[in-house]
Length: 553
Image 1 (cartoon, helix red, strand yellow):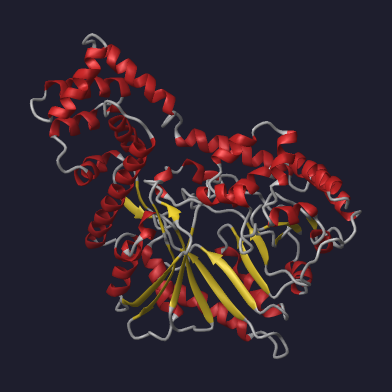
Image 2: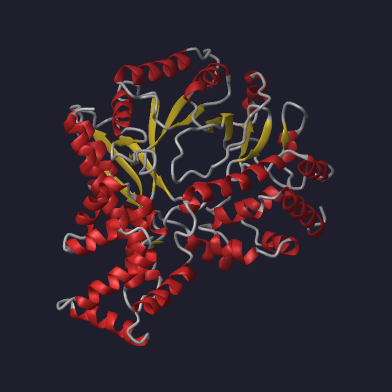
């Protein structure tokens, strides 16, 4: 990495950390009462300790708070205990002759405790403890999430799920279904070493008994015209994708989700596109005309700038990789490129384009001789809450269409979607991502609009297991070990209830567990809530039985 590249990365890193810090503080101030202003200081102190490596703390502070005194800066950087930090903070403000409003607030706190700084510190710390912030290191929290996911994963396809499947098999065909699925997912692999902070997986279900792909492709080929290869990092599993393109005669749309790690050089990127194109050319003349949709993750988590303890910076996956993919795609119009982004505060305005990640991409493309031109975007008609200031609501940019200079007839699509607090994302600061909490409240009160459905299209794993797009724990069967799995799928009452966000599922959940209100409170959107409701195999069985009873199926 050249020194110029290092310098530019450092500038971007500081600007990004500044935005994160200031957004987190705005959210904290809007969410908590802070009579003496010290809780905000404690939040800032703890956020900095957790989120920024020591070599960069001073620079981040200086950029975010340029008027912060040297004494307060040193206090924050050299104190490693909440109590001592508060003592130093109170003593500092008490001694000040300027900042009269802050000094008066501190004097009121001390007067409340007879001038005893220790008692004042204990008072503030007691309030701080009730907020339950920064209580657990992320590594410990990740381990807890991992164990929970591992426990849930061990139930998938087990005896309880098979008992549920047997109940469904005895039911009549009572639901009206289209003859084909809108899409079918294919999961050849689940592992991924990137550990993005927003990822729903801390633990990933291993696929132990993989079968010959052609045994999977045959039933899928007759069930849909659109497939999506997804799961974990699929770079080592591209031959299976090529094989699907070349052999599945009735499928017309072949999509794959990749993280872009393969595109470190233009030659490597070109090779990937060439292999996809070769697979398309291998399709027989009597096959359905097909296209490939190449979905590439492009967000503040995959392209996050990381620092080690020494302060050395690197991108999790470089923006250069994305630029290589974008420019190479211009040579292959039969391969449709879509960049998949995650919504944050920048989505409320054209700042999404002007600063941050997209700006990094534009600068990289410009340096390569392909500046971005003809940018257009579409804002969602439904207003969403500002994650840092939830009382403020507005439309968010959901789709961006842009082209590169000289290629105005080849637009590139960027789609931006919300994050739900699954897995690792449960540990994100709420200010970092736009959620659908308001939409959940609306759906619970009024029901979903016709256009909103829980995604129950099937996901087929390479061991033959069939689960759901929006709930990989809801197991329907194994298309290798048994016949009629898709027929069972289409008469499963639980899937139909999930698809329409059936509120009866909440009542059935409450019959078997006592934490429904906790689930509703923690859910960040309707899809998240109904995902949480069905995590337990025993709960899935209970809900299925109750649906059968109440609908006389």
